[in-house]
Image 1 (cartoon, one colour):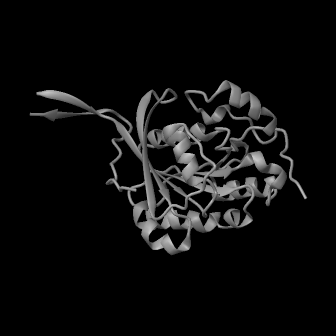
Image 2: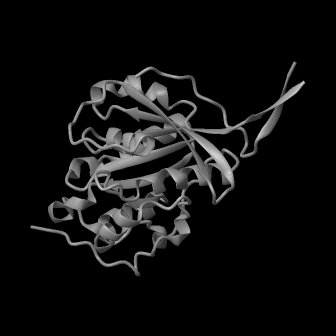
Length: 246
């Protein structure tokens, strides 16, 4: 008989209004590429990425499901929420409607998936001068929903990998059960815009330990200006189990 390791797999859904950067985010993470060209997602797109997470000493295969943000596809995309172990709630710095819709997206995910691991992502922070919401309002929403907040720039590859690494680590630590997020506003995991060039030059760390992120009080304030579907793969419980092949 031969023994075969079964890797940990995690289905991640990325939800939010259209044009907030959901497709660009998973493409950047999975393929390491970025394009400015916008192409509306029709239904659901799927990508896959395998990564070793040194913080937990385990390899995780991310099954990334990019869902359409338009209401006309809502009934379709919600069927793909089933089996998800983690979720990214994304909005754009320059789109107030996408920020206002976050609580609605949060409820949709909870209704379909229960209390899974989730994070709040504010994308396009390179456009903070054009921000349509106050940074304190964003932090308040993260605290209200008990979610870790990441501020990202997909174009510059800022904090993108860290988002997924955090989800993978929290999923494994919870044994495949949602943790309900975090309660403290000090857990906002964003970097000052002044650090963007340094982060870009240094690259992403192999291990995205979220506790290494500076607290809100330690950060410089942001300047605010005038599709083939695959079946869901079940969680292996955070351990590499053994199965026998006759």
